[in-house]
Length: 500
Image 1 (cartoon, one colour):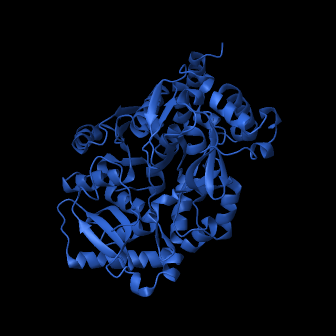
Image 2 (tube, rainbow, N blue to C red):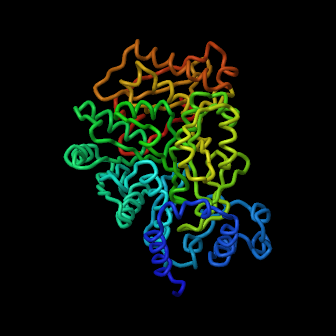
Image 3 (cartoon, rainbow, N blue to C red):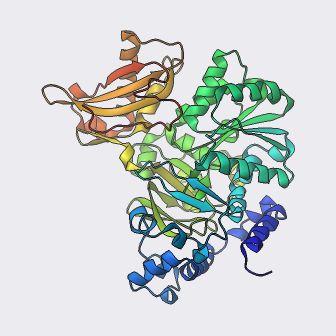
């Protein structure tokens, strides 16, 4: 078959529909991803005009890149030196639109939104990640499943990409029905209450804070989630294991490590990795042992931990940041996505767990896919510096998820510093209340003390850098959907810098 856009799509579709998941993710399939990486590099350097020019301007001959060591000497791509510098058309395969079937728009969290084209072949490649979650975690091959897409629908990558991949699963025989209410609460409640009881399980797919809001509001409306056997697929934000436990309790979850999974996905590269029962089990153990987590990751906050297929997306750690390479819609080589994190080999991770005596269910280990791990903190510009201590939103989140507080806050907050009239710096946390809840001095103090307690427990910089008189944050409690801090319909940001 000639190398055409149609042939690429049909080949990817045929391979996916006719290859069992166990065969695709077997040990043999993971052998020598480096050879595949080098082959992909040579194909991209020859077929993508922008990358060909990028190398030529730096006097790099692709023919000299023959080993993994050579590959790791290549300059990194960034949004500034590549995406914003070269025209979109030149960043595509063949320098044309032949393989562009849809286009997503990034959220613009770093200042400039970008267009990210992709083909149907790219979506078939990412569908493997969805199948891994629905099969390994949710056992959807044997359960009638209602998949309710709660991501915003439109040009953003989350909703439409998720719909495509879930529909691809149905073509492989999974008994899944896909509904697409998007981020419309009333439609979600109607779908879940009227259709949910007809299925063995209901999977809600969306951003973590929004799903929690749906769950909490549903409870307030009298919805009993437990008989619906709710599963969650999440993306876009790091959350704590206390958050997962809280949500699981409200849903009546019976097996936390198999009832939810977070995807590490971006508009730039699609789904790069996914949580697995093993990665969740390990993360929950590390949440109970913050000293081990700090030793392993070098920071006080707990990152998202996922496994990834190095044949699809190849990760490297470079100066504490993650680089990935992938022949996706816009092919990228050693692209710096500005996420802080690192890579841990499968065997290395298990050796670390064993060394520290952490408890991991043998059943989970024996059935796990032997793929490497990547851990992701997210971008450093979402932190606040206070007396030289980096305050991470993940640390504050834990303070809001403590008993006695979690029932009347949504989990959303804004972290910022400000100067008083004497030009002394203070830490402020503005917290969103659940619908119908009101602020009080008692509640405000409870939140402030809880946040301080968790910051001192989890963040050694906070405990050692911040003077005792400044460790208690100033807390403001605001009603649900406050337009200045918690506007509806937009992606929430957890920090602000240099507040007045």
